[in-house]
Image (cartoon, rainbow, N blue to C red):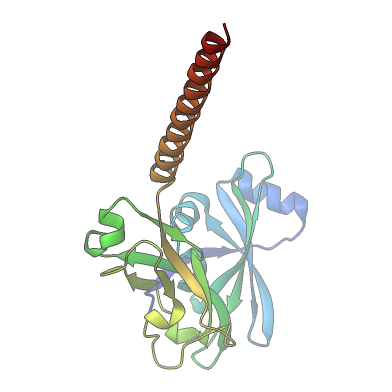
Length: 225
């Protein structure tokens, strides 16, 4: 299960675009905590702190204990808004959860033991089909990441969701098929070299045929002369 991360937050007295801009000028990011049949709370979080958390690929699947005015709100980050020019975070929504809450959430994938893959040792590459997998689970059972073992996989092999044992009570959101998470593909460099070699061989064969035809034509001309 992913670790719970503590975030210190301040209450925001005012809502609206003007108040949000003032919050950002003060080095804070405005946000909202909502859900669990409780009133929404307007909050602000230190911009640098939130930026560091956001760099984690598992940002959206971590549980957060948001400390606000002596209370603790357990929540998940559910919606992040960005500035269209700077691409910086301008607002974040948090969904309150409890141990009983069942959610659908994307969890990042990771691949290990690349050196134990014959296909990768021969120059193949990991073609990641799903950088994250959507799971259905309780809020207190969210895996931090899904780790897939590449040991023994060769070029052309596929890795399916069934290759990993999910924790108890956790299931894929897609249940009607054993979907592909990644494949071991031949490198484009190898394919390009093979294509170039084939083209050169074909060109050489063509030159030989033309040369033979030219020699035959000259021989016929000499015999006629």
